[in-house]
Length: 414
Image (cartoon, rainbow, N blue to C red; front, side):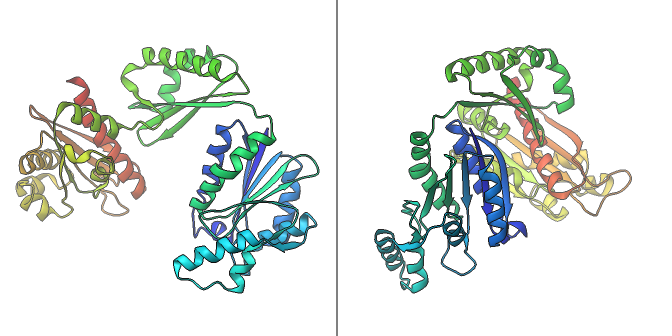
């Protein structure tokens, strides 16, 4: 079964907001065995909406629309759908009362514009939006498919998908099975990884499809099965990944959702050890990755963003001679930052980064993207240099990942 997702709104097309709805809807639909054929973003124009829907209704059994259901004149989705399905708008008493009560609790007057949100196409099945003022709408098509219109507010859309849409889709259609499982690898480039596991990939059953999904310092390996008995496919995927663990045991972090920082988090909690961070070019990115995880307070002692050289010296105790002799972006300064963070905080381990995030500040010897990182442990301090690219955000992301991996590799040895 094939679905198309259509997001409506000029704000998406001009980049004013990021469309997260289509990604969420895709996950929901895949979870019940519906494959996504297309994702389309269009503007708030009646002719474009009609043209798009007429086309995708011919190719997809399920069409889900988000956006354009508010109370103002630029929200035209409902009116366009009523026209397409040759239906009059009628006032829905239950929805109108819901909107009135919801606005009353918020201290907002119930106006004619708000009342208009309860004017709904007579032919649709109303999907009650318990968390907002715009109901969803379900239309059965002459071809046996469905068109579902949902509000664009993400949390309202989420509740409607879970409470109204998915149960109805399961009841309306005989759904297949889609299984996705993802393994996370680290410390190996995509091209080298592909060579290492070529024989393993070649031996996969025909119905298992492998995808490589690279990100900073990790590669996700996703195995997918379509319209195959769920228990069989899950068993085959588990066996395939077990074999992969024998081929690249040192490069596997875990399954989908696992991160290197999460593994470090688990190591430190289980061992009762502590961590501090000293960051220059990464600007607190590393600290934020750890403190975002519940339970980090049991081991994360301190984070210092020592952007200025004076902060490196005054707070972390870096010898100014290192900076004068080697520059702030150097092995000696990275080591001293890590050792200083460990000493000042009393932590068992410390991570440090110092580099050139750009777009200016580079040189022939130290181009933009050069980052020194160090890890101080109770026994030693190790430091490495990495070139982390040319784009500032990419450099920060990659440097953070490399630095955390440096600590992870040390913890794995213990």
